[in-house]
Length: 309
Image 1 (tube, one colour):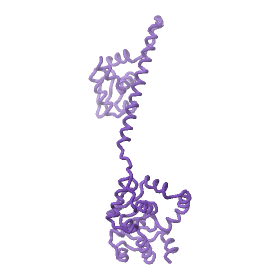
Image 2: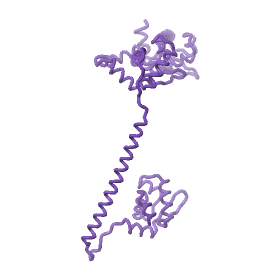
Image 3: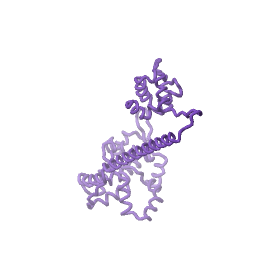
Image 4: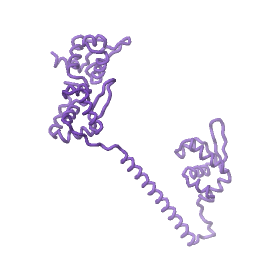
């Protein structure tokens, strides 16, 4: 009996037996849909009820059907089915008091179990919070503010371009940027074979709190559309951007190989730049017979007409 009681303390067992008592015969699929559990869980629980002699299982093809046996029905009626006493035998006040006390005891027991589960969940969440890597302070060298400013203005930059802007070697640039990545101010990405860097949300917040006044924020928001027309949010440097736009403006549609020859630059670098310009809307790409042709988009045409003449 202790084994049966421990089994039926599990929610699925009682729900399954109650459903079988009401419907007498049910399909495995219907049980899963009615109780909101998977058919695999239904099968595992039903196998244990079959072993107890409470139900009978019948299988046709892939469809399993379960039927409640007399032993199962008797167990459910004895232990879980609430029946009213006969009218000829009035309920005793003492019995009603005992029943009420038992109901309250069960209620308080369930409430205590629920509170214990909540406490365990809260402890687990606190442990996960404590296990998260904390943002550690970064050593603010002489290039710290400059790197923040460049990434805040340019959004995303290559390590090579950062090195050129800072006027230091790429190795020295990597030392500074690595420290800022570890501290959580900068996020590292990859553009094909090159590393890219951008400010993390924490880096943006730090820069705006320490270096941007409310008036500058408002001005940046109001002028951002004009900035995007003058120069896209690409990782191209100004020289490459101007050269590509000039060649496409003068020559029109052009395959990638010919564009590389005109610019005298490696195929991979030009392809990366063209991908960025296409995403920004300055250039449009068309593939003809497995060859990529590039031309200025309407936005790129307007830019060249207003800046390159």
